[in-house]
Length: 109
Image (cartoon, rainbow, N blue to C red):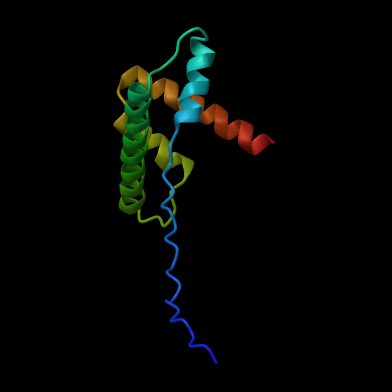
C-alpha cells in the first residue's frame, strides 16, 4: 500500500470586509445636476469620505440626543434635530425639508 500524503488542514477563507461606498450615488446626482461634467477618481474619493464623515457625525449626534432623552431608539425626530445641529443654516433647512419629503414618500407607499 502506498504511503498517504500528509494533508494540510484547509485554511479558512477570510471574508472580505464590506466597504460602504457612495460612488454610484454621487455619480448619479452629478449627472442630474451637470450632465456634461465628469469627476476624477481622486475627487470621488474625497466626496465619498465627506459623506461618510457627515453620516458619522449625524449618527453620533442623534445617538447622543436619544441618550439625553433616555430613549432606546433613534427616531426621525432625533435625526432631524441632529441635522439642525450638525449642518449650518440654509443647508440644514434644505436637508430637513428633503428628509421630511423622503419620509413622507416612504410612509405613503
